[in-house]
Image (cartoon, rainbow, N blue to C red; front, top):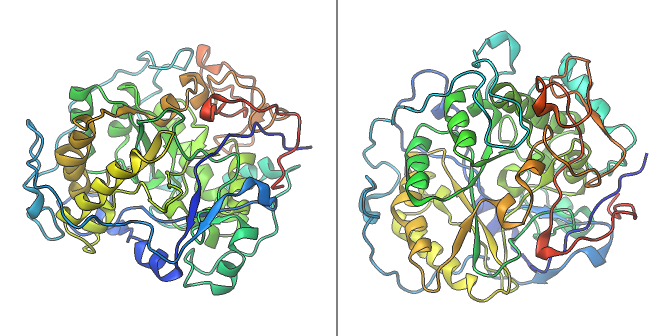
Amino acid sequence: MKLSALALLCATQLTLVSAASQNTKRHFHVAHNNRRQAPTPSSSASSSSSSSSSSSSAASHVTTTTTTSVAVVTPPSVTIVSAATGTAAPPLSQITMGMPTRVPPVVTASFAVGASAPISGAPALPTHFVFQMNQWPQEDHIPDTNSPEVQEWLKELDGFNIPNLTPTTDGSCAGDIEAAAQAAQRGWWTCGGYTRSTDIVACPDKLTWGVSFDDGPGPYTQNLLDYLKTKNISATFFVVGSRVIERPNVLIEEYMAGHEISVHTWSHKPLTSLTNEQIVAELGWTRKAIRQVLGVTPTTMRPPFGDIDDRVRAISLAMGMVPIMWTRTPSGGVFDTNDWRVAAGQATGTQSFQTFQTILNNASTIDTGFIVLQHDVHEITVDLAVGYTLDAALTHNPPFNLKAIGQCTNTPATDMYFETTKNTTFPYSNRTTVDVDGDGKSETTKGAGKGNGAALTQSSILTVLFGAVVAASSSLILF
């Protein structure tokens, strides 16, 4: 069986960042702050940001610029701004770890079982999700790879050439110097920012802002959803499986409001540090959780911390999920708001907004649009988004066009989910069945949305980056 792919046209160059810088950028993902018990307001930190790496055995597919400077350059001064009108965000100077917290908002939206989906041809909303502990892995822990579900999902790798790369020590450059030295060969984003033609790294149209939020649904995501609704902004939410089963109603509201849903693993661990089986478990359980709540299965994913290499990439594609990263500029600018640093106690709100202003400056220096990394798992990161960064983007001169990533890459909404995708070639053309539930019963055919949601296709998203489609007749070189 041969893996075929449509190559994306990726013009954005990437930066080689020092190992020390990358290790510092790794934010802390504190699982106990998101336990199933009633959420207690907390300002302690964690979130998912980071550096990642990707590279292919074919150097022609990689564009890098080597530099010893840190990717994010802070401007010498920051304009003092007030929180956006109509938001409850505190003054920027007060947004910092340890700040007073507010009571998490109540999810008010309610959708009936059988409600029509926002995606044409998608199945109606399924029966309300009821958490049963014995049916799911332990939250925020790497799932057991010996479970019947994982054993079924491992079959999806059959026939695909998964690179034989040794897992990294901890997903960081400093933690695995030997792997870091081979970053170009490994296609490791974390230690060099290497990408492959199958990675989505930017929006094609200049001044187009790909809006994305990682790590939720969080206790304060509702505030973000309310703001996005008032501004008529669509976003892509990269959700963690452990958060999905905690806050299924928030996920439903995201989806029904027209936002895009994507996979961000089960426990938010650096994927390059895991075994093949563990990677499959992380992706598979998150995919299953999303489908049980929404009735649809995403065809995209984002690796936690952006930590991806050719092995992780190959497994993701074999499971029908296209990696989505965030943008870097040829000069080393990284479109990471660093909001996670504030939640982690590594920066203040003012410093984070300085980084954001650098993003605005970088945006005018590239000929394409861009994808920005933000987070919705903490009150702090939501406050920064609704009170400052999104408002600054909307009022910028020249104005930015804020869109969800599928929209900004001109991807049909139907191609964002297995059940409705009409794309039959990317990233492969020979796989038509997938067992999302892991119950040993492979669902077949596409267009399942018109039935009971059981029939799926493993043809994934048709990505049209820079408006160019490259013929899918050749094999994907990195494999």
